[in-house]
Length: 75
Image 1 (cartoon, rainbow, N blue to C red):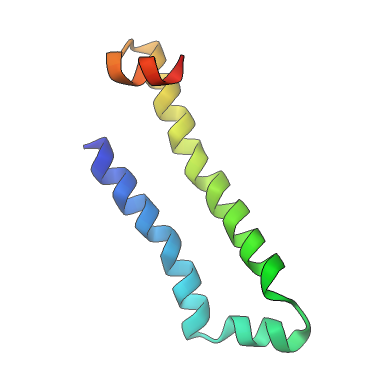
Image 2 (image 1 turned 60 degrees about the vertical axis):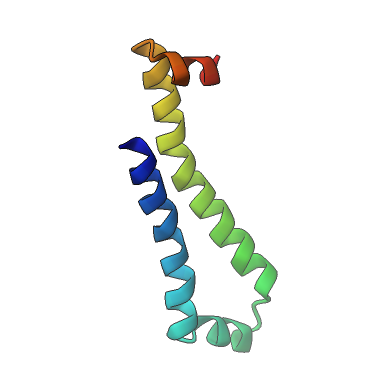
C-alpha cells in the first residue's frame, strides 16, 4: 500500500512543471529575464523537500514500530 502512495505522490510533482509549460509561465519568466537554471533548481529543491518529509516519516515509524524491512533500511 505504501508503494502505491509513493507512486502517486511522485507523479504529482510532474504536474506543476507541465502546468507551467501549458500556461507559458516559463516563457514569461524568460521574457522577464529569469534563466532556466534557477527555475529548475528551485522546482527541484521544493519538490525534493516535499518528497523527503514522507520518506523520513516512513523510516522513523518503521524504526519505532520495529518493521523489519524498513528498520533495516533506516539504521
